[in-house]
Image (tube, rainbow, N blue to C red):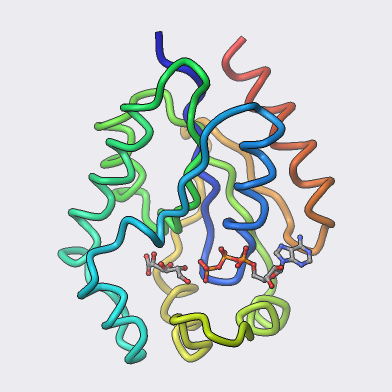
Length: 167
Ligand SMILES: Nc1ncnc2c1ncn2[C@@H]1O[C@H](COP(=O)(O)OP(=O)(O)OP(=O)(O)O)[C@@H](O)[C@H]1O
Ligand SMILES: O=C(O)[C@H](O)[C@@H](O)[C@H](O)[C@H](O)CO
């Protein structure tokens, strides 16, 4: 039997790695940071300040979906931007039933949170991330939350929603 499948999604700096890890701990599930599944060429492109294309993201999204699908009974949480509806459809095609927790915030707050010494993602890519983002739609299983809230509150809300969705 497969366990819960959760993607914590949002643009760069929205907190998906931070919150995703805590959600995984709270659910007793595994955690993978989607950034670790990117082909090296994608990371290099982002480091150079060049936005990824749909074609760049396709193999990566499949890897995200397979990571969710291959999880054991404990389940899996993946932090993945999953910016477009089509990207989430691709993930769901590999891992049906995936729950998406979207972290949304205003541009200024996100820009502040992208200032992380040593991180490959330059803050200059925030506008293309926001332009690409297609928020979760009403027919998609998931929840949208405001990243101005403290991580612990976001985790409590996501865990409650995931539990009621899989019940
Ligand atoms: N809810 C929050 N409240 C305050 N600070 C937060 C919150 N969530 C994340 N942060 C901080 O914001 C920064 C960005 O968070 P994080 O790296 O988790 O984002 P991300 O979406 O995974 O970004 P990326 O995809 O670019 O790696 C980090 O310094 C993190 O500690
Ligand atoms: O789809 C994308 O453009 C990428 O996944 C980015 O969102 C980054 O990987 C991530 O946010 C790193 O900071």
